[in-house]
Image 1 (cartoon, helix red, strand yellow):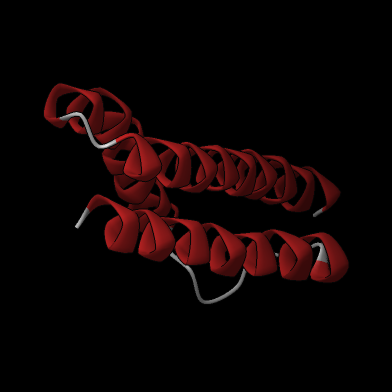
Image 2: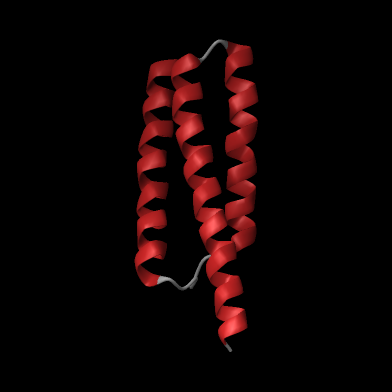
Length: 88
């Protein structure tokens, strides 16, 4: 079960990476709630504590990727939202 969950987590990391790339290209935050990204980022970091307690090391690796990508995405969102606010 850990291997399957680790694969899902890793694929999730790839999909969040696509969001990071898209925001980098668009340089504007549209249609995504930062609150949702905050929630899923926190959940990802929680998983980094939770999975080791279960001995699920493949899941830890995937969760690390998801948490990291979400943190980057959130940082981009903050940057571009502030930039847009000050350009007005």
